[in-house]
Image (cartoon, rainbow, N blue to C red; front, side, top):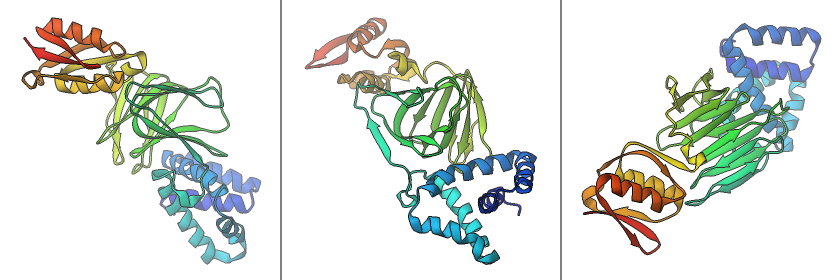
Length: 308
């Protein structure tokens, strides 16, 4: 059996039927033989929690496997392999009977601090949405919009944590990191220790260490590069602009501050660089206006930058 995922599913069935010392030793040898084997086993392990909570009929199929010979066994192994791929790509599929998901969302100018039962701290950025799923064997943060920062609790935990996006998963290795879901990719930036990134279509995870950032899609991970500070500036109440068009800068500042911001069409392409206080947009725009010879005008509850 050359497909690591199919082999992992077969080992799961074999060990579930009767975990003898000989079987456990043989499984360990297979598991340690190659990184692909370890990654495949990790995927099947993620599925076990979903299967444990599946409808009764699914559980009965598992229980009957050992009594119906090789054809049924092969069918279940194939089904587990396909199910594992689906569950890793779409961990919240309702037909798997997964643990309930608690959804938390933020509006413009709003951040939310969340604490997991083990003490892990999660900070949700403005205009973001995350689903918290606490299963029997694993915990998942499903980021479907915006950004979040995770500071894992010290010490080990019996249930591994991962951040899932449409592109794949990020597994912390005792660390502080941010994840941002963009239109075409997911961005992960690591401040402490390291994480493992596993795209939906990949067999092996990629390690991203402290001081590094990486873009990934469902197809793969780009080589990690050095962080520049813009990835998690929002968590410090800052907005970092690096040669950014004024229109894009105002949109980002409006998102973080919750204050309506605009500018004259003639200056939308003005390039902006610097660090700005997202929680004090008036002060930030006053500084920007002074630097570029613009005029700051109040419009209702918002602010407008005009050419002089």
